[in-house]
Amino acid sequence: MKNLLIPLLTVIPFMCFGQVTLQIDEVDEFEGTLRKITKPSNCFKSEKTAGILYIGAGRVDDAVFISFTITEDLGCLSEYTGRAMLKLIDDSIVEITQITDTDCDDIASARYVLLKRDEMNDPDFESIMATNLKKLETIPIEKIRVYGSEYYSDYIPNDKFKDFDSKNVLIKHFAALK
Image 1 (tube, rainbow, N blue to C red):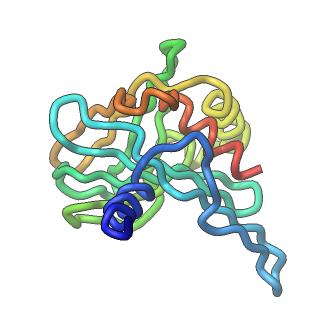
Image 2: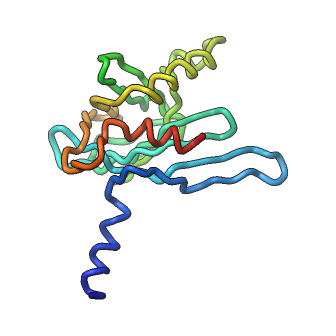
Image 3: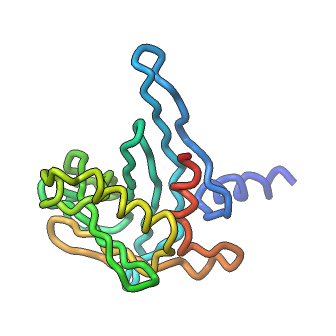
């Protein structure tokens, strides 16, 4: 029995289940800053390669972000040009911008703000972010394109998860942040 449990326990953390849980849920005792970060889900796979896209979300007070970790070579995830596009099932597209340092590792990670790069200095950026968040909280994802410094890759819902509609994974992550 023990020999069966060990392989199962190594696979379970990487599967995509219906319940999204928090990895971090804390309030800073000095400043009162709320910080929540979800555990990543691997519900999206590359359309053309064996790459996997791990998806998570987080918030610091009212500021929300999406985190991606990729398992294929796109070059670097660049703090200067990094972006991703989320195509929703209603055919609308939400573009998001990388806000973390450049990562050139084989398995690279980055966090993204819910704005296009040129909207980051817009005086109305909070309203734009709120509009994008509302879409992502309510409309399932059809496809995600992540841009690296050399290549991009399109990720689609992983059809191996029959009991879980992976198109709704971001909706579930944002719900867990409330």
